[in-house]
Image 1 (cartoon, rainbow, N blue to C red):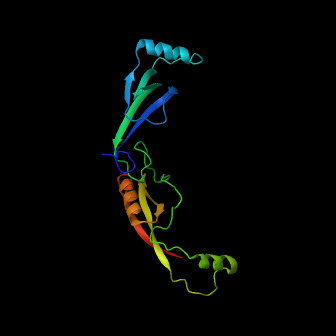
Image 2: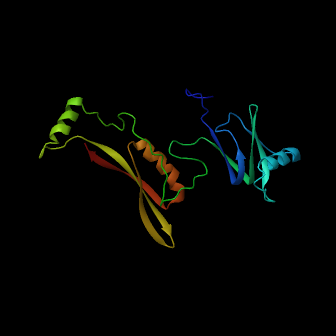
Image 3: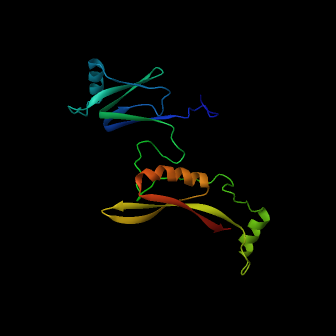
Length: 191
């Protein structure tokens, strides 16, 4: 059943490769993909007359709630399931050298951080932070580190810093199948 945002918890991703021509909607609610009839393919070939379809490319029709589009492509594939909060897409292949974690601004106070009062912000801005005053406020961030092996050589990589242990554990779950070992280290951040 859909959640509070009226979206299903599952995601279905469709990958066309390579794409020579396309006419599609930004999103679909239910989708049927089928091979075009000879008449439909001929009409689409005429519509894209400045381009000549390669012999291997075929026209696939996209149909959803009375809307029809097409993709001219050689291959199509799909994946479906529950996409984790930290996994950008199902076709993403994890790389220790270039992990792609979602990046977004913090919305409000989270990760057990406190919010400064307006007076504290004004004092810090006008006078700066006092010298020699002990900074006793701190919280923890969670560093995800992995070891990869290639040609009998081991390399260590810091893959990401997460505000919550839950996000770090989810990232670790996604990384573990692709590396020799990985772990999470809590690190104090002084506020």
